[in-house]
Image 1 (cartoon, protein in one colour):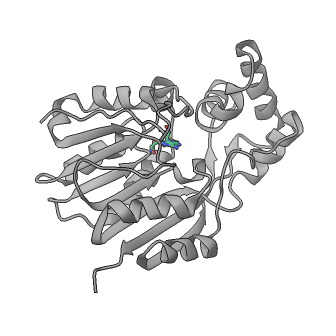
Image 2 (image 1 turned 135 degrees about the horizontal axis):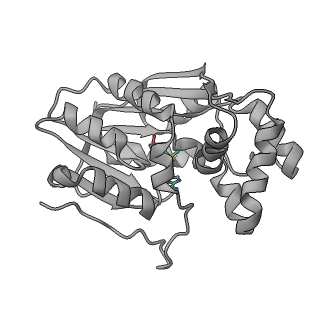
Length: 266
Ligand SMILES: C[S@@+](CC[C@H](N)C(=O)[O-])C[C@H]1O[C@@H](n2cnc3c(N)ncnc32)[C@H](O)[C@@H]1O
């Protein structure tokens, strides 16, 4: 079967407007997401025949790793960005018979083409304003007993970076990002029907080289939403001004790491 591509539409029929990503630049950067994804996948403890949902799959880096661990299994790759999914299809062109690719806004309830045995989400939850709703969505598509493993920016994430951002723009990104704490996340997971819940906040700063590398990283990975609101010719100077205000070329990441299991039917 070929990969399935679905258009995501809101109830009224309007196409949902989501942040588009510069997928080519994204993949060329020294992304800590590579090890975040690998560590999260290891926590899934896959046997090799599962169908795994990757929520906010981006360019398919983790989907590729998953397929390598799933000789008899499949991946359902979901993302809202057409550019990211185009890159994913190119990366995984020879394996599309084992992937369902869905363009969807995960803020909305989802209908998957098949049930999921496990679910993964890397560096995506902090883009979602309502984690309780997102966890209910995952619980709804996961089979009873299925594992949910996720990681994202958590409480305290990018505190130094956000101070620099506030100095330049007057806003620190809290109107855009949702950096949740461990206790509230645990409560939301339990309320959504998860058990065996383990949620941690882990400091994990990423060091970059000042100049082109740092600014490409900030412009592509961190400030996409802010830049979208600016005229094109003001974007580079804006990123440069924020980078110049950082005391070190470091993004002071704090990661929210989630492991949970959907309750089994009693
Ligand atoms: C930082 S990227 C992470 C991508 C990938 N998981 C990785 O680790 O490289 C965040 C991803 O979340 C997706 N995303 C953000 N909000 C979304 C939404 N509401 N619905 C669907 N995808 C969304 C973006 O399109 C983007 O691909």
